[in-house]
Image (cartoon, rainbow, N blue to C red; front, side):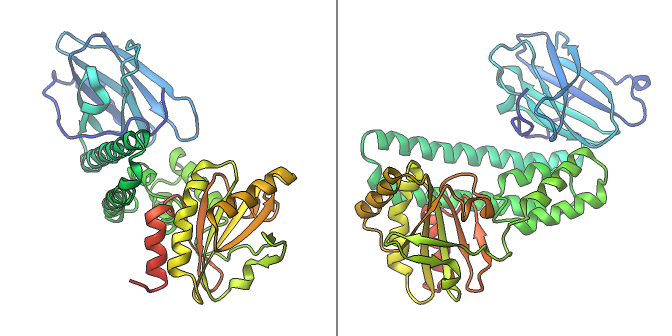
Length: 385
């Protein structure tokens, strides 16, 4: 079913269900007590989720009684993530993801007609703490999705230009608030298992230190746990080229067919923009890059755009036409098939932007360096605030 982070939980209402049969509850077992309103189906399923597999492991399916109550008993070995869902619902309706340690009692309440939106989970201090975070993230997503919907409707009527600045400002403020709340959650206890969920909303490039602190703490507390070891492996792979490390030097030809080296700009902050001629979001970012260069370019700062594209004459000519159309006023370089930069910088999507500090080290990178956020970051760095 679904991806491991598909059904984020919100959680604290516990239920007054039938008395637990203690003889069934062995030491180390997890008890999941479920109460669902408005059931149209008669079954609820429990599955074990794993970060190492695309498929989940079905544990059990039980009948729901006439009052909407159901119970699961599962002999757990490790702290893990689980999900309950309604297997007879044809349209999906989402599921409820939760974490549990051996010996935990988890209680789940929800409306079967809208299980993901209404689910509430509790039973342990960590699940109840996670509830507050997930409730906030759900509301934040609803707000930013609403902003996007308003903007797209305006765009369809060619009215979006007037809303651009206000939209970007509201969106940026909302995402910064979200980031702050998540960081507060993680920083209270780097070793809490639920940080594996919390981290999923933070940019992995911008928050390298937080990812690594969580990794170290989880390895100590949950050494050998499958999900933690998989996370540890990804962290090691992720930061082989990362924030704080020297930027890989490259030598490419500019739009005037002259060689340019990244090392030529040592002593300056550099915003590098990796893009492609076929990438629409890349083209839409050009006016913002021009604004940044116009406002901040000088002795302390430079913008470098590296077009990673095919080496045929038609594509190179398209690159030149785009630059001419926007009258770009910063360094424009061309990297045929990404041979000089793509592998070294692990470019997986376009545009990818990063900031290099005056010592030639990667200061920041990630999807947050776009639009108004990119402008604010550069403004802060070059001291024009």
